[in-house]
Amino acid sequence: MTPEDLRADVPVCEEGTYLNTGASGPASQTVVDAVGEFVAYHETEAPVTEGAYPAAFGALDGARETFADFLNADPEEIALTESTSDGIARAAAAIDWEPGDTVVRTDLEHSAGILPWWNLRDRGVDVRVLETDGGRVDLDALAAAVEDARLLCLSSITWNYGTRLPIAEIVEIAHEHDCLVLVDAVQTFGQRPLDVREWGADFVVGACHKWLLGPWGAGVLYVDREVAETLRPAQVGYRSVESPGADDPAFKPGAMRFEVGTTSPAPYVGAEAAIEIVQELGFDTIQSEIERLSNRLKAGLGDRLISPEAYESGLVTFAVDDPEATVERLAEADIYVRTLPDPDAVRASVHVFNTEAEVDELLSAVDG
Image (cartoon, rainbow, N blue to C red):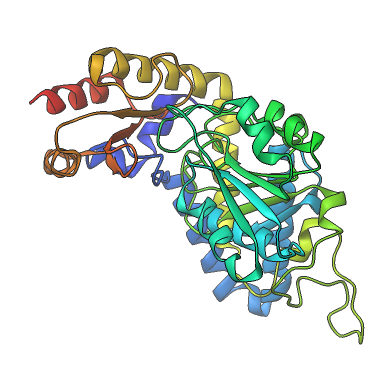
């Protein structure tokens, strides 16, 4: 598998210059086919062969094992969710909050990492916002902020600046103050290798529809095994417990208690296909191509560049006079990027399937 092979398998590439993977990655035909073939089998053959439920549960268990291997976790530490927002919300609702508890988040978070904590306000939970500078976290300020906090929420790669935060170091600081850490890793999934053991975070949340180029509807919630045993999910169903028919059922071990009931396995089958493609390409290839192309884009943007000049991710944010009008004008030319609310700017996402010609096309169109 080469970047050219992947590009040839991504139908969106035939329709325009797609530089918006950080919002939603375009799936390959291989992934689309995997989803469609499973749906066809599950709905038309499985009911009268192995059974619809065994087929579904087998696919879900297989996906859990694939995700666990991908993240260097144990399968029991993985819960299958629908999205990053879903995973963060499940974790937030399972902690036994008390009035006066504090959640710390940075001012760099997506709404997925903001609204679950806002929703705890009626339970007396305070939210402390850690101010940052240009997508950077001051570690001394962070240490002071988490000193009396219950949980810290932050992103591994910031969605607005494309900066990469030192997660392992931040987790160590937080844990020194007995503060749990939840990492929104959605911009890392598929863009960089992710080892939850190296990070040491208590929760890692992500989804497969961005850099992994998987389908919508497949998310992952990693929960450290010891932490999971202290949590009680807000929603419980037959997939949350060991014996659903028991008078006093026990929760499933680890993160699996966060899975509730019947859900389509198809997105997770597609996510497995996407992970296989990433592994065939290899992260060395993925990162070197993203670095090469993003550096080309940054050099062409000059003093309009807002993201760091040195490579940290494929997210490239830059200033224009009218971001919304610029994005609309570029879309009319079949070049797809997005606006950002803070900073008020335009963000392009450069992935391994993109080309030098597409980067140059964007630069010419921005100048035009």
